Length: 208
Image 1: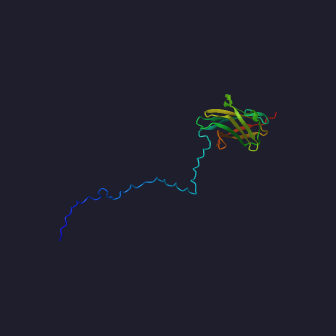
Image 2: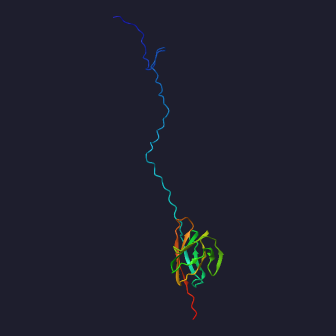
C-alpha cells in the first residue's frame, strides 16, 4: 500500500473561513415598525345619564318672628280708621322680610281698605320711628286679604308696624286677622303664620 504524504490542517473554529471564501450569512436586525395606537372604545347606544343639579332650597325663615300687638283706636262702625299690626323681626330670622299678608278669618264684613293710605314705620304705634318704603299693596275681597310688599325688603333685627287704613265695617263685633310673613325670594318662598290679630268694632251708643 502506497503511503500518501499530505499536509495536515488544523481545525478551524466554527464560523471562521479562509479569506476569499464566503462565510455564513450574517443575521439582519429585526425591523420595528411604527406603534399603532389602540382604537378608541366603541360608544354605546345609551348615553351616560346626566347628573341633575340639586334644586335650591325654597327661601324660608329660620328664626323668631311674632305678632307683638294689634290695635284700632277708632272702633266705631262706618268710620275711617287705621288698623295697626306690630311685628318683631328678630335678628335670627335668617332672611329679609319682603311681604306681609293680613287674612280676615272672622268677621261679618270685609272692610273697604284704602291701599294708597297704607303705611309702615319702625317701632310701634306709641313710639313710631322712620317710615319704611313700601312697594305694591293689594287688597282681595274674595280671599278677604290685604298684602303689603316692602321695597326694599326689611333686614332682620327690628320691630316695625304696618298701618292699614280702611272704612270700618258697618257691623260691630270682633274681627280676626291672621298675619302671614314671607321672606325675600321668588314664588317658592315659604310663608309663616306668626299670629292672629283681633280688632273690635262697636256701634255708637244711642242717646238716652
